[in-house]
Length: 101
Image (cartoon, rainbow, N blue to C red; front, side, top):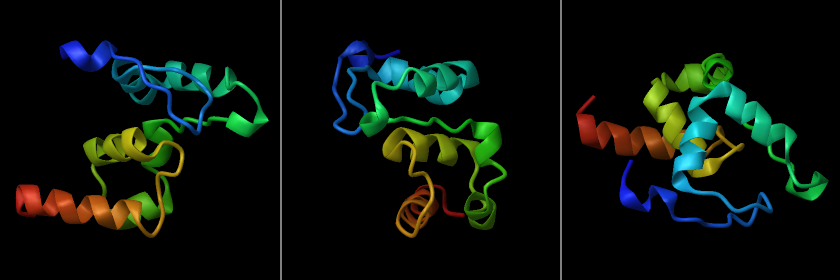
């Protein structure tokens, strides 16, 4: 991990303080994702982390042909709102620019 992966920040939508390292664990470890989903502060700041295996079966994810690393990038960038008219097309466009597919 990079040195700045332990720097804390407070996302406005979850009512918590976290680190990049902790968020990486949340999206890569299904048990950690469940734990933070259950430990949400209150109903206003409810957090539900969907597991990669669950998201692979999502219709929009399948239709977009997303790879695991793209799903993880969306989870880290958008949190629970993984799919939608903006997120998947925006990532797909950028990824195709990078890898030429």
